[in-house]
Image (cartoon, rainbow, N blue to C red; front, side, top):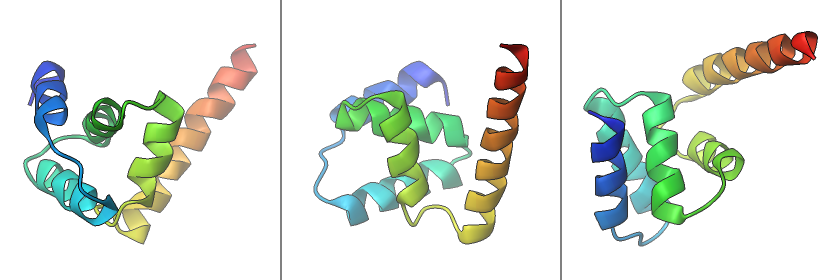
Length: 86
């Protein structure tokens, strides 16, 4: 699914509550949308900054604890690499 399609779907999606958002993100994930694509969906749908969208996406039930740990490990690695470059 292309980012443009993800953002269109996010703009059309009617947010009800966190549970329904989690179900929607799970649906996207099951369709093969990447974690970054899911963040883009949440960011567009909630009209929030990228860092807040990442935090909200990580808090959803769409990802189990093992997946969240793997995602956070990759995120921390990227941050450390960026800090080394500065």
